[in-house]
Length: 198
Image 1: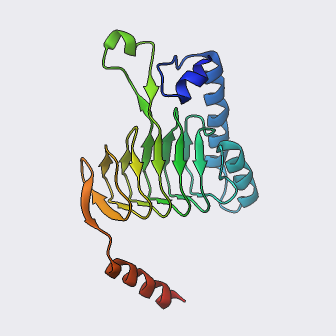
Image 2: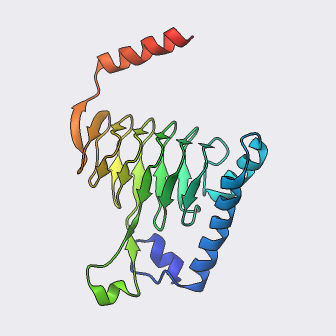
């Protein structure tokens, strides 16, 4: 089994393995090109997104700068949006559903480090993250390893998400906790705003 195989399975692995270093360097080069691109270079940005992400680069909208570790471990649904300065550390799989939006400065972090200092010098591991469709993650939120966020939920700005969040709720804080369920009034207000914009 390769170090890459161990990594994506969430097992202890050597992050300095030459193959992993080469993979990180390659995607960071692509991110650097994306981050240096101009707003009008839409064709270039689309091509770079297709090359960076494991799935979903075709309809993604990303506002540079954007950073990730591998890219290939990130699968995106339709029309995902990343605002300025988002980071995904994808040592384990990160799955993001359709129409999910990330405010500026959001970090999605799968890596973990052993509590034992001697082991931590040479090994790390991770836990996957799943974010459902139609989720809105507010600016500066941190999504920590192993978390699942259910479809349609809203994560408040600056939240630190340390545990699963169910579908259809507003959750916020440090640590992030459910504040309330989203209501018919929330949906009606959204529909009225949509009608006003039409």
